[in-house]
Image: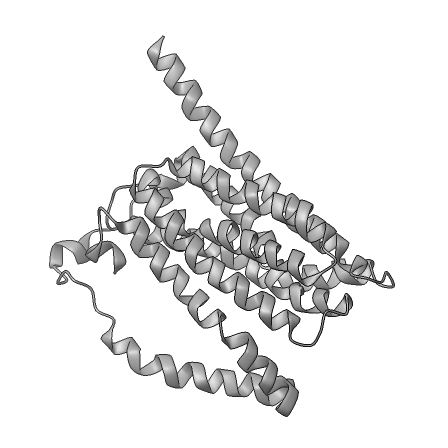
Length: 283
């Protein structure tokens, strides 16, 4: 539906759409912390499920596309030729690797802060900071993608800076201010990757029927990381158990950083391929 309303500023539109979760993330950690403290995790989870249904359910009938459905559009089929495109597989692989590491900071920052003895509210504060930074990052990356900044540069900037934030800041953090700096950097650059999906999709296909499928597959790749983050994180933390002062999270931090580096390397291979083709074309 976004594609029907936005063309020239499609990246910014997707950036705003993705950043919407960041707005709620600015205050929800405090709400959840209060509910958990007062009612426990069972009632809190049920309350959240009911609240999501009540708050979002009535809005679904209002979601309508701009263009009327036509018989021509209905008859058209998805062109699966994009599966033969190296660009699709490069972006999909980079997206999958980024998704494997992306969710760990939000999952483990609260318990990491608690392990350092930084106070009961430190986790919620850090999540709020990360969410606010996410809003700014996704809007900025979406806006820049519309300003003809190459999507490969934006994706490479996102993953590289996220890796630096994990391996250089989070890994050495021992106080709330340092963790706040990490939350700002990681929230801004790490979350900005999602806002580049619109232009990644455009680079893969311009077909209006096929584009939603490509975008959906990018979502699927990120979702794989979301689903596996819990089990993988549990294994990594248990393997580091017994180490105090935040040390039991060192494998989680390392895994997150390595995933971001690997994603950056894949994106870099795409950038190098473009430059190589350009040089051969000029020769």
